[in-house]
Amino acid sequence: MTHTPGPWEWQDQEDGTWWLMHIDADNDGYIILEANGCPDDPDKTAIEALPDLLEACEAFELMTWNEAYKMMPKVIGLINAALKKARG
Image 1: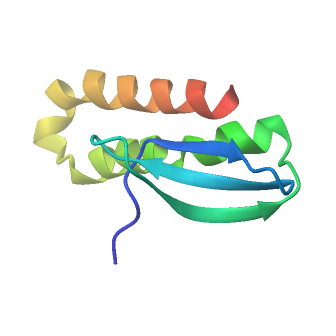
Image 2: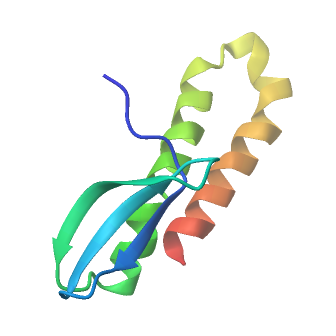
C-alpha cells in the first residue's frame, strides 16, 4: 500500500469543514481527509509534513553501513527539513 504523495495543503470550505488536499503538477486536487472544524495550527503543519517525514525515514531505512558515510548528509538534510516543516 502506498500513501498519497505530497505536497499536502489544508483548504477551508464555506461550510466550516477543512479539506486536506493533494495538489498535483497539473494543479488538480483531490481530498485526502475532511475535518469538521479547523485543526489547530501545530496539527495542521505536522500533518502537512507527513510525506516529507516518511521520505526522510525511508531514505534512512535504505542506507547500508557502507553507504552511511556518504548518504548521511543527505538524510540528515531531509530529516531537518521535514522536522522544520512539521514544527511550523
